[in-house]
Image (cartoon, rainbow, N blue to C red; front, side):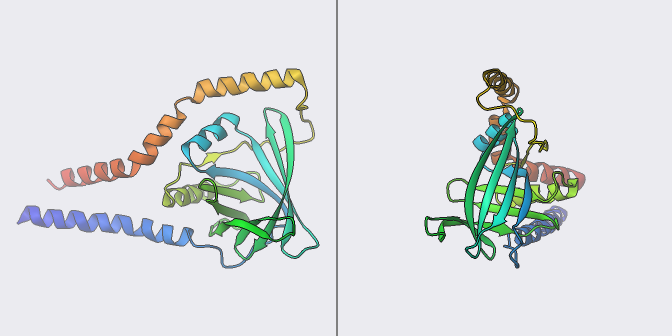
Length: 234
């Protein structure tokens, strides 16, 4: 009888632990109610996706920000992406179409094209969380600030967990684009390749760790918690 009561208590404890997490996911995976004003500069703070993309981000560790400007066509924006890696800078311009809480690519007629990215809820007042799954599952945290608080980053990690994605990779926060090395500079190119090679050597285990954490974290954590709780009953 005592053991039966203990098992019942354990089940109730498990349900009480899972419920807050479930409620958090339910809230964080909801799209935003009101379309945000996209115009201006947004810093890419962190990304979460597949293990391979996480490896690429950790090896390249770029700093990225985007300059968003509205065009004459309603809801269409120019999206200037600025990226810096190991002192080498690059720019690329894209066009996006905003429809409430959805962001689309733009076709030649300035019309929405393809599958949209969805803007999710966030407790960060000057942040945007974008979820895309047209090619790969990708969760991106943008902010008006180049750095955010630990609590804000923790919330983004929770969103990634809710979507069964990897732990977010925080990008570099060096956004000084005034003194960049030229992409055509041979010495800069050699230095860049050496840096990438070193990062690969330092981070070769990231993919294996990522796969292990993604597939084993939740069952392992639940088992360890249940094991400790059970042991404490006796």
